Length: 192
Image (cartoon, rainbow, N blue to C red; front, top):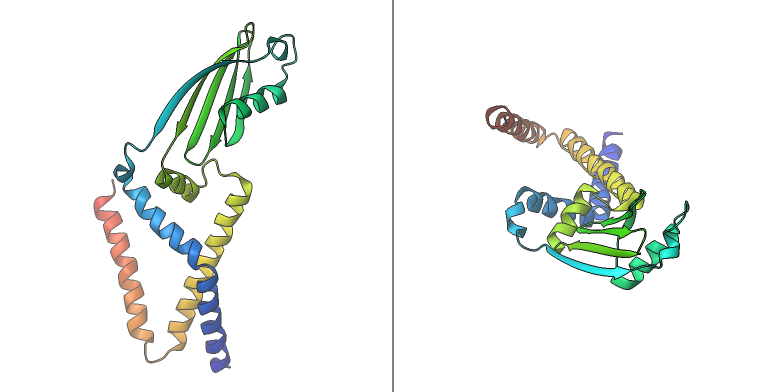
């Protein structure tokens, strides 16, 4: 029984590790870049643009939201998801967001004239936003959850393996305990 459990644990540990390798590597690297945001300073580019929409799309009680959004996307190559469409008596505010990306537009309802501010960040900022799940959508959020489950399984199968290996059990558990204590000590001593 112990041998079968050891074989199964080793098999699970190896193959779950390999399945989750890319995502684990991604979260390890972006964890480092998130901790050192000064490495990406100055990569953000903001551009401003002006334009005009059809005034009939904006007049009356019903604003033609779909037409406004599609025209803005087409005219300025806007990417990202529509996150906000605010309407008041004077103007409309239309916002798009994506990882490392934001576009905000303010449209005068009487004239159809608008001002657009678009902010594009560098690749590292995009990766950092993906790490946090910021403005990345539900499917990416699901991938984050799946990767968390896979990392948990890799950790648990690793502990199970060390428990099953009599020769390395004590030293392995002492190293794991040492890592845990060291992490707690840094937190207790240095985190305000």
